[in-house]
Amino acid sequence: MNADTDSFHKAVLPPIAATIASLREQVQKARQAGRTIGFVPTMGALHDGHASLIEAAKSARTFCVVSIYVNPTQFAPNEDLAAYPRTMDADRAKCGRAGAELIFAPADSEMYPLGEQTRVKPGILADRMCGLFRPGHFEGVCTVVAKLLNIVQPDIAFFGQKDAQQALIIQKMVDDLRIPVLIQVCPIVREADGLAMSSRNAYLSPEERRQALCLNHALTLGRDRLLAGEKDMQSITSSMRDEICRVVHFHGGTVSIDYVEINDAVTLVPRDAPFGRMLLAGAVRIGKTRLIDNMIVDV
Ligand code: AMP
Image (cartoon, rainbow, N blue to C red; front, side, top):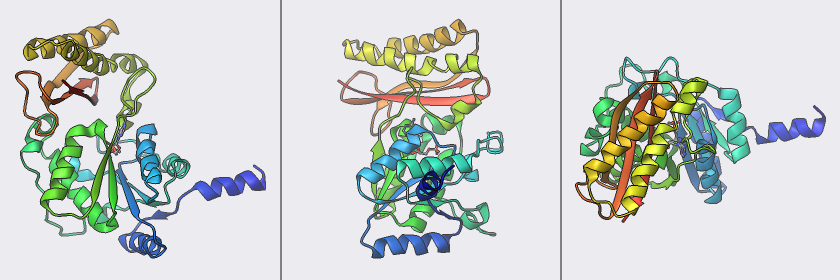
């Protein structure tokens, strides 16, 4: 590597703050320099979906802080906390390329100091969809996001539509707790064949990767039937379930469906007839990997 490329690579690697004190110091410097603060919370193992949030923060001309923290309180004891991919060096390079200016990568003791007790408990939005299959998950998410927003104090925080239910719950939390931050929700970034990008896609074997397309196929089918004017919601969701099984079986696998639903896109209440803005959403388990995806349909 010659001196030029070496300095280029150094230039795009954002500094890492491991403590709240160091993070606050650097954010304060940016504020004093007249910058607004953008914030992208992540659990790392970054892909182009995460990069799109960083790019949105950059387009909004903010000083973009990315947190990389695998939050233990949002994993149930039987879930993949220990196995969750951790790829800090690659993440740092990706943050730099996308335009992040600071990484916050705290230790557990920084986020959950000895003796801590307090949790942020969401309301009924968290009782549906993923909330039914991952008890306590959204309480863990709200708790860590509230802590991170208090620590970073951003002007704008960027979340992905990929986790549609999470984005609605966070918006509600911010409204209810009067947290002074704008929440911007960014579109789902997909692989060329339509699979929604996810850090958990790294768990998939080549056969499972082909089977994983079932969710996108089913959502597309549901969307097309709604847009074609079909009114029977039960028939639509059952054809979506059939499509999931068809794709997975075609590629030689088995699948367990957590849910496939067509809900109001804001309240998440199930629709018994098509109208307004709807969220088509599903969660499936392929092998040991749980995948989620969704689409918005307006009729
Ligand atoms: P995670 O690291 O999975 O906790 O995700 C961090 C943020 O990235 C969340 O706001 C996610 O919704 C968002 N995100 C994850 N995957 C995608 C994707 N494929 N497209 C857009 N945003 C995403």
